[in-house]
Amino acid sequence: MAAKMQSRLREILKKQGRSQKWLAEQVVVNKSTISDLVKGAHDPSLLVASRIAKALGVKIEDIWFE
Picture 1 (cartoon, rainbow, N blue to C red):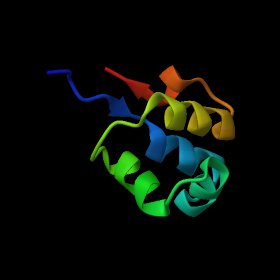
Picture 2 (cartoon, helix red, strand yellow; picture 1 turned 120 degrees about the horizontal axis):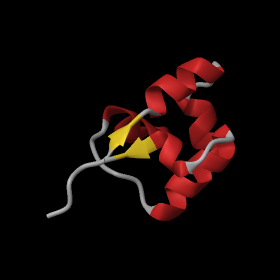
Picture 3 (tube, rainbow, N blue to C red; picture 1 turned 90 degrees about the vertical axis):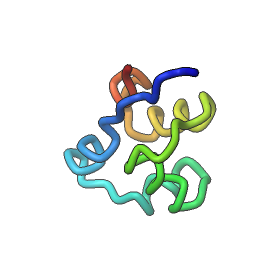
């Protein structure tokens, strides 16, 4: 079984002054999906991770790491 990824999503959103709602709109997912990712409830698909990174102007590995 794969280990869960650690996330810096909460701190990046805060640093950029962005809301979870804003990110959900940019990525075209439900706000609850973003909330779950921020809480670390599950790991994102590669597609969603890519869209989040693009919306925030960072690399995927800047957000999620082992």
